[in-house]
Image (cartoon, rainbow, N blue to C red; front, side, top):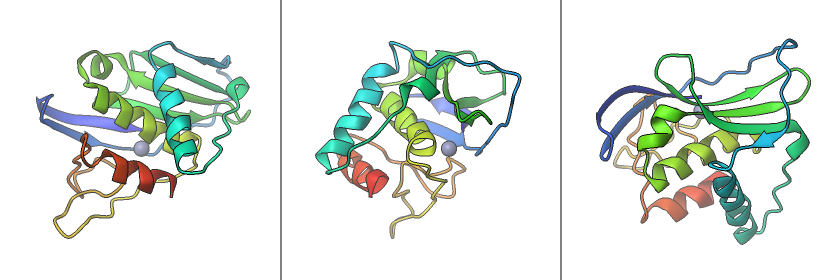
Length: 160
Ligand SMILES: [Zn+2]
């Protein structure tokens, strides 16, 4: 889960709080479906894994991903695991509509890090206090500088 605490300038400063949520629910019926907006970023995720020698297996029967309104205030992304092994990635449409390509990639990769790679949050930093992982919690324990230069190191770390 990824939350926006405050947006000062969406281009430069996105302060996010992340909550890790595993929600167990038997009531909600979810069909495997990946929305057209998210699909290219999932392909990219698989491709980046392949470039690093990994064969990323995604069971599309058990995964849905969509851009939609998220009711929890300030939450911009969620990976929800249901008791029937179905997983659902939800991305906030408010976030999505104003996000750059890199912002979108970061968030989808973060949620796939939870859902597909089974990773938890990691707020490790380098010597300058910068986050070294896409899986940072967004809780400002480290500064997130995911950009076109740092991107490949972040993705190395994601799949490592
Ligand atoms: Zn998270």
